[in-house]
Length: 253
Image 1 (cartoon, helix red, strand yellow):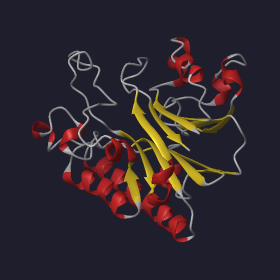
Image 2: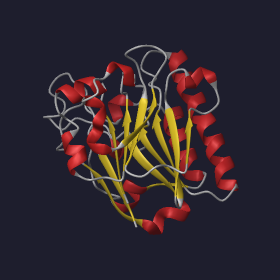
Image 3: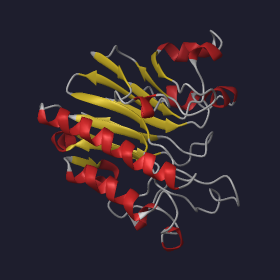
Image 4: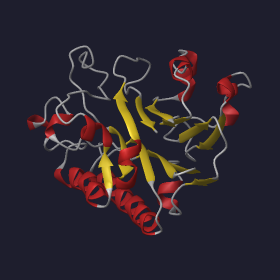
């Protein structure tokens, strides 16, 4: 099973640029998009065909903001929007879908770059989601979390770690929450498979950061320990353009 995740930074812009053609050409079983900034009624009938995939939408209440969408080749056994906490759910940040052998979470973690209040909101989001994951793990479920986590976990995950220690996205308290997920039964599968590889998934749009290789790895696949032996590959497609993020991929047996 192949899963592709991508923060497209605006679905309508991605469709205008034909960016998603690359995704459909990979023939994934599941596609998770973040920061779609659109509702389905804002798309044309032609745009909503999505190469035959069925779509699950969770847009934000605020127009042109946030939102996630999951695309499925085969129907999910169960679908849930949000986490049951309105302060987060109005921003359209989570879709969970149940599949044979695992539950998939498509996640767009809030950014903390707009000040201390949003950093606190972000940390609360991490806590709310981890509580939900803990409950599911206790019930014996295996989970795959994917999406934009908006945090680089360790210094290898961004170009300029030293100068960004006080920047949201690499704050100690944000990094600690990523570590908590690993301490609660998850594996950062890309780093597990490629412990020394330097690749990034996001680049600022200023100062030619992408061309200069100045990026951050903030998009992840976190998989339950029970799924690690089923993982065949985890990739970062940093050559694929169309957004300030690039797609990431997980292949499960």
